[in-house]
Amino acid sequence: LLAAAGLGWLTLTDVHSSYLGSILGPMLVFGFGMGMQFVSLTLMAVSGIAPKEAGAASGTLNASQQVGGSLGLSILVTTFGTASRNEAGEQAPQFLREGTPAQLQEFRRTGQLPPPWGDEVLTSGVSSAFVVAACFAVLAALVALFVIQ
Image 1 (cartoon, rainbow, N blue to C red):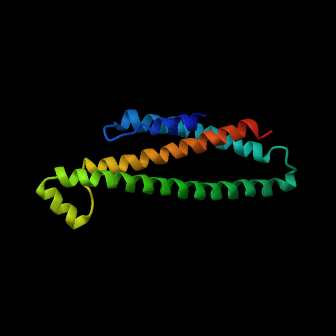
Image 2: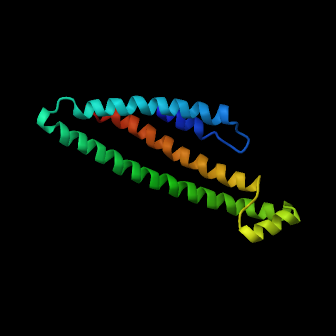
Image 3: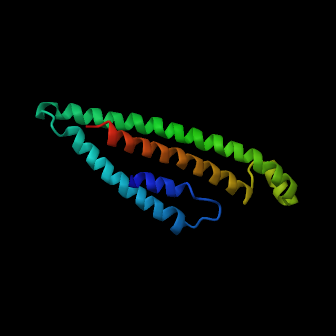
């Protein structure tokens, strides 16, 4: 639940967020929660297993963590990309109306929105990915609470 709380806190990140209050604090909460979770998960996966099967149990746990991490990361990257693209579609017209001639020229050259428009795009993508990650963490907590005996 601490990991979910940290991720939930990270969803509040916006363009005006400070590192200390909006990034470091939630990352410490998230990291502490994940640290407690991984130790508990490892102990649970290998406890009650016959010594000759402990290697297989540990290997299965590690393989599951790798596959789950890869799948989870791909979902989060897709969420980030989709949210960023959608926000860029909203920010670009505003930039084209309000940008300075120098900014417009640089945009034509690079195709990248300058601050603050590009910052809005980035934080929208990051915040959306953290929303999905927080949902994953809550779902994992529910599975641990109700499914695992």
